Length: 282
Image 1 (cartoon, rainbow, N blue to C red):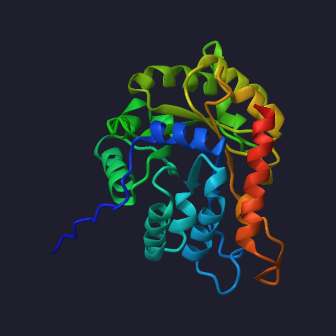
Image 2 (cartoon, rainbow, N blue to C red):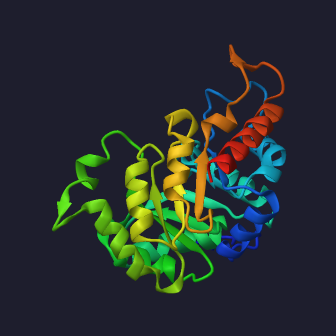
């Protein structure tokens, strides 16, 4: 039996908060662009890597972060992991990369996840499922220059089936927010709160006034930008990463497998317009 040593990422990862703050300032942006390659929507004749790196090149002056979703790369099998590493490496060093992985397990399994995503893929932050408690988070938190975003009040329609259940005198998502303050002893714990639930976002912000909030659900999920951003920003008018994926990636008209017009230019324009709309709501 032979073993293969994983080749570490060549990207200089880490320093998430420092990179984020710098990108927010230099690009005047709270926009985080999701990178979710859908094989049915990528123009014919364009590779996944070419498509995503084209979007990155076209939008990098308008964003504060990029958020690839691991599932959309895993669907391509072995090749998907190579594509993911290449796409992460293509992001400019001054813009952080947050991998939407939603991992959640304990002990040595969580340690293996952390090594894979931080050392091998080379990202600066990950999303995590907090259902198993601090045991599932600690191996990630030990990377003090990285950041984790725990699922708190998500944007999907059935989220309330569990997240709104009462846990004592608070709802479960509020309990997760309360716990996250304790978990944040190293200053590297944020929360995921859907833009489709602005009232809940305001409640989470009240519980966690200084932590970062990842705010998915604008664009294709039709979250109200004004309401969501107004509810989630911190006292400085920052503290949120407003995520949009499909609305930026697939902004170009698309007919019969062909992009009508320049797809990269359409993504650039969509990112610029979203950045400006978010700033108007701050």
